[in-house]
Length: 159
Ligand SMILES: Nc1ncnc2c1ncn2[C@@H]1O[C@H](COP(=O)(O)OP(=O)(O)O)[C@@H](O)[C@H]1O
Ligand SMILES: [Mg+2]
Image (tube, rainbow, N blue to C red; front, side, top):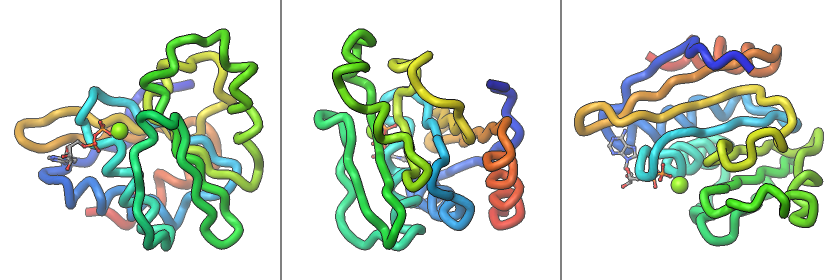
């Protein structure tokens, strides 16, 4: 997919990362595939936490560091939060059953997509977090219609 950033946002603190995640919530839909790239500690899980809160999830949000996936059911939307940092055997993809998670009623948000490159379905929105001084910078890219609509809506709500 196109990896050119189409939108950038400065995130001076963790609250700003939460708010950016929440701002993406209204335009997320079942069937979308969203990736989150960036170094350890870049704020990927924080952004997912904001997104889940924005979608109405009031419970705890654990990092899927060890479990590889955490799931949530928010009314009729299945939300799968993957973290593939520890997934280093692409040969295990078939046996893992992870392919079954990518359904039209499921929103899949993926940390460390680089570890499963070539196995994911087409990506709608690619988010990248980078260290920027004491804070972070968020880059958003999209090249499918659902992803582009998502970014346009995000641009109009976030200052
Ligand atoms: N914009 C930001 N500026 C400063 N610190 C942030 C920002 N966003 C998140 N953090 C902090 O960075 C740390 C790591 O965040 P986390 O979401 O666990 O990163 P990752 O999932 O990318 O490893 C947390 O302490 C979090 O509060
Ligand atoms: Mg994380």
